[in-house]
Image (cartoon, rainbow, N blue to C red; front, side, top):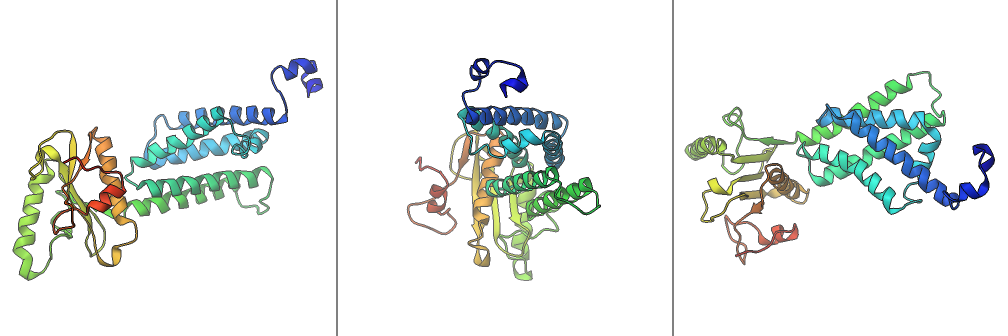
Length: 294
């Protein structure tokens, strides 16, 4: 290598101690360049378009720098703290974009892992000329990326937020919508219409069943708690066949993320030592990091 670089061996070893060190430096160099290119690609983008732009930036860099990319694939093997930070930054950008789309943290992490597997695997096949069919490789890449994006879009659309535009048509899970309870449902919806303008949120799974969360700014909540800068959860309910699918966690994560977006100090809820009707399950909230304060 010293001969190819037209330098003396001692000069080379002043900068590179061994082969492992060389691989570390190449990997770090590649990830830093890729991080910059991916970041620049989303300056004027957001949401799913930003994800697409980052994917194309990854594809372009990896196919234009085949040798560097080969080393980058083994960054977990040749890892140093600085390299760990760079790769973390790259995936953290993706995470922050996806978090604005109201997906659960678990779904986001699964999607990032899936996207990474697709990008690295597809580029590796392209770089090794593994595709023999005359069909456009670029069009196949576009096709595959759109499938991934549309897949996660469908997961986001499982939930509906009740708004002034849809409240008259949507079922509200906490009330029985039959003739006998018509008046109660009507009154609850009228009450909600007034509360929505105050920041009240009613989010539900788009199914006929009780899978929903209802919360509001603590300053506007109809509860005997004094405080500012918090969201208060009135009710988080998952019942029947919908239990055990992670919906409760997803709904709670949505509230927590919403609190962060709105610059709140946190989220609060009323519970009790023993489980009681119309009060939150204390064990559930403790499991996800809540603390008893009173």
